[in-house]
Length: 303
Picture 1 (tube, rainbow, N blue to C red):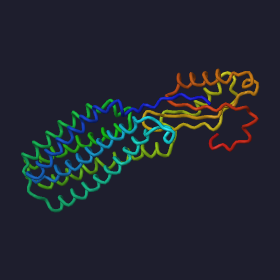
Picture 2: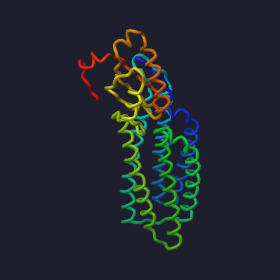
Picture 3: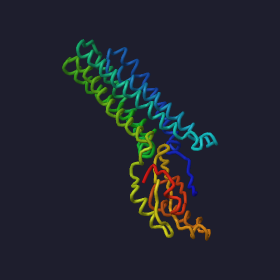
């Protein structure tokens, strides 16, 4: 069998940015809690609650990337890399729960509006808007590379939109005195949170179910493998993802008996690795070379 190992994860390269966003989120959380209590704005409290889940989510992501950096062992041959995906799963579930809670609380505030100090509400919302914009800039590049960082990015994006909704509600209250705008903004925040939680959970499910990674064309890979000199065919071809940025592949490759007897297995394995490295983004490949005579004795889980 041939192996091509690479055990680094995409989120580890962005730990510093995640930490900066965590500290920024905690600071804004305190400001929004105080501002919401003093001003009487439920929308600010709702946004603060979302900030709390963001802080927990980013902290969980940081812990997961630290675990993922631990070396592999005989008991855990891929180390703790899957911890990042479990962190993203928890993030998605928490975001969904908070979104539903915010919607319920917002509806209650629409039915029974309360007095709101719109000026303070506006000032605090503007601070949150600016802080979330900075957080998005810090995570923008990393969210394209790591599912864990993407989860944090989506949380901050939701906060930015939520702060924008609070700003709009404060302006409406200041201009018209329409107090239900505070509750309406809260419901809008919840409606922005829930869909992105569903999207994140869908991506996590794809990884946990070991589906073929997005962008990996197994038919094209099969054609390239069969194009390597000496290869007669391929079966049991599988591709899945350990964690963000770590796709893996395994395959049984049929070669003639005389090729194995001439000791050319090493050459074929080298050609296979170079072929996939040059055309496909797969970090870890495992190939089993076998003569056609053994193929009929195997139970194939994949064509």
